[in-house]
Length: 106
Image (cartoon, rainbow, N blue to C red; front, side, top):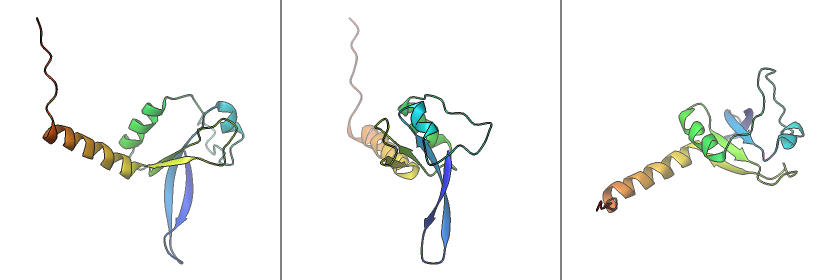
């Protein structure tokens, strides 16, 4: 997990808490965002686990996924709030629009 600052206006800054997700452990070692806590280690974790854990950790703002091994200069940022809204929208649509299919037992 890392921290970086975003400029909101010319004179104010907002601290942003980000999870960096790398495709390989080798990419973690060559990252420009070093692990600052000696108690923290990098572990392989499925993407779905990262996304659901990000939803549960309210202090995390987003996750940046680096998808291509060896390329840690270009990643895709998934913002926690946008993911939460997307899931909520999907759940609402499923609850109001369509019923779950009936499973017949014969």
